Image 1 (cartoon, protein in one colour):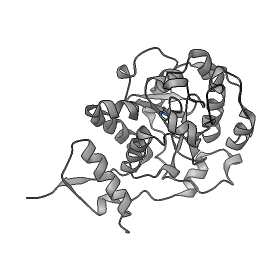
Image 2 (spheres, helix red, strand yellow):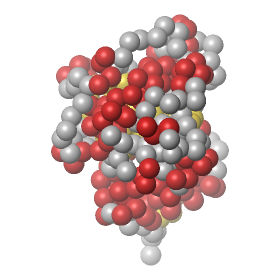
Image 3 (spheres, rainbow, N blue to C red):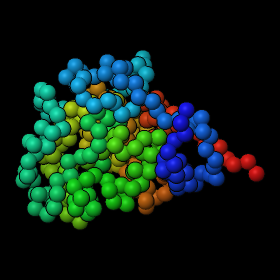
Length: 276
Ligand code: URA
């Protein structure tokens, strides 16, 4: 078995170091990357998706009996009509040079989303910040770098997953998006999630979690719990920007990400303390 690439090992070590865990050495066998199993992944998807690129991640095991009991929460998204044969390209075209809400006034770029259209894992954040607004890509600033480390610590690369936001234009001064802005933008996110149909959606922070789950509860009351969202499993965890301000919460996020890894059949890297 090939050993993982050096940047990945470095990313794991950096992330564990951030979590305050270490020092480590990497157990080669435990650091195996997930293998690709196209046939099983194809079987899970609708026939219309069969000609897309190979799947990025190992398919998770068949649904388990207890999944049937996951809480299903009605949300804003329940009103969005399905679009037959939808694709990310078509959704982006439909958005156009959007002027549907006031966020268009100060934005530089629409930040549609980035990553693998066939991803089994989607991260949903709140809205673009300064760097994202300039580059047109989600999570490329400081919080984005931390998210990239988190993804790499899971044994994945950014290109394996899909990353998007509740709103696609930067709210001025990085304020939270208003309800009407979220309501205007969310049909497009809903279509993105339906087109990708990932196994797992991870909501990053309160705004994403409350919007997708249709709740006013604080994320601290339900982070790390599984929900059912339109045929995907959904889990909310803290936003990377919160982790930059509150590094002590990183261990809770890592606990949540390990649940996601288990759900996706990803092998956690097994670091061991260096012997004296
Ligand atoms: N914060 C977010 O919620 N989304 C981004 O794209 C960047 C920062």
